[in-house]
Image (cartoon, rainbow, N blue to C red; front, side):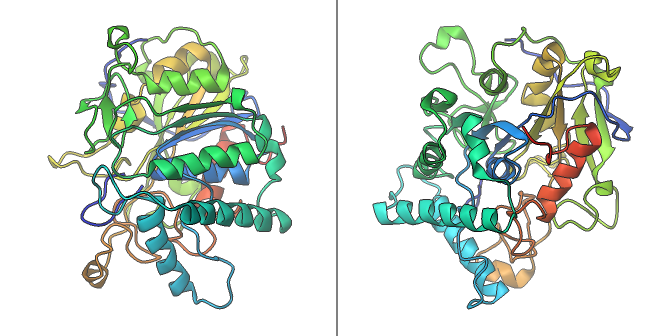
Length: 399
């Protein structure tokens, strides 16, 4: 998502839900074991992490302004550096290499040496974690459907970072026919939706932008939820208006107890869920899609006008209308801000903080919760996997 100063992170128009989501307990549905995932910014990096770690269960991803597995780099298994040193090394790499530190276009491009190192460290980490069974065998990724998007006016995530991710999929054996890489839309750092109210080229909260179709504005506005789900599942039924009663919230603390950035000892942390009518009885086999917000987009984030972000990502991205019409259960896990200490701000790290700070409510793609943020046992990854299992689609299920 959007960073300040020298740091950066990473159809049918329907109105938002008028009624607050009912709070429920997760229950198992009749779900296809092949799960799909999508996300924006830090949520896009988390999407790639989930796909790589749980490649036997994940069958496709939508990556909107993200990057390759372990883009933040540093040898997280090095015995030479201390844990703190590794944490700060990852912060520096994330903000200066994966992301654009100036937040301005055009920006100084990376050298071939830098992009080569980014790709090499990703490959090395995958190889190491596979060897110790920390992640599934990456051979399963070659069967996945891959949707990639980078807005041409995005000043946060480097286009070269997304290019390296695209190349990584080729290296992993994914055929070109399974990869859609859209770089035509002049969008800022954002998820593009018909329901957005941020101008297309801007980069500002709530990072839900409205953009005309790039090659033919007469076709209307970009519906990125439609584009992602169509690529992942094939032709879809036309969307319908989401049903208020099918949009629910649940206490994610039960699945993320003591997980940095997902749990809070002062109050319950509620995430969102959309379950179509056809999926609720268990008579119909439905799909599970996990939609992961970016920084400053979680339920408990505060917008510049002082209002809470609330359910905006879960209701304005446009997934739920397509989900209702196509028997797709949508899980919206939530990341929390962990305020940065005053002395961290002196080091101009107010966005990333230390290894135990996350002031903008980002997902952990640089190790703010510790060295283990990439494996199947990484706290945030395991918490999301637990939610999927509670719904009836465990991420340990083989293809």
